[in-house]
Length: 220
Image (cartoon, rainbow, N blue to C red):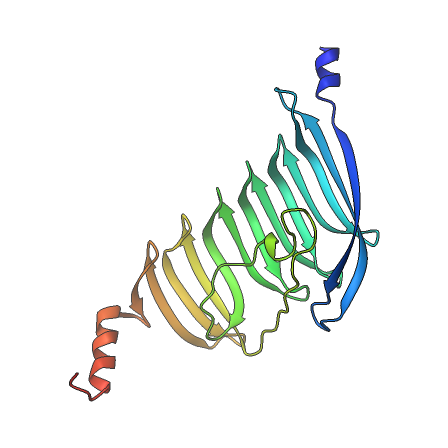
């Protein structure tokens, strides 16, 4: 038992790097020092796997942290932007997103919802452009590359924001999706069934199409 405990005892490895990144707002390149601390332990075959806390530090401050269990993401994971503002906070189970999720640009959360076994589930609240077509939130690869170094920076700007409220089931839109102004004025509604749109503003989609066709005044 003692030998097995020693064999599986976790340890921490550290590495350092200097990396030039573009500031998200000024586009000025900044050279910064990065340190990564990874907790390992041996699996039952003797191979080292991530197990416990992994942290990446920028000039001495944590900018990315994640938790692992036997080599798979499990528990909280977070990343901060260049202004040291929390940008993404998520929960994992068995290597997949599972539980509460929120992401944004540091000053405001633009995606708030939850995942179930890697798929969007339940109600999501999205603050985005009025004509936004992208309802899938940014993931950690926007900030962290495969080597744990900073990914290309992204500039977030959101004029004329609207609030989108939708419902997902097993990763697909299912139920009502609404667009409204931040003051609560309803702009549009849609109805989905397993990812397929079936109604727009309370009318079946086919009626909407015929109304549009008649308005074209073009026989072709």
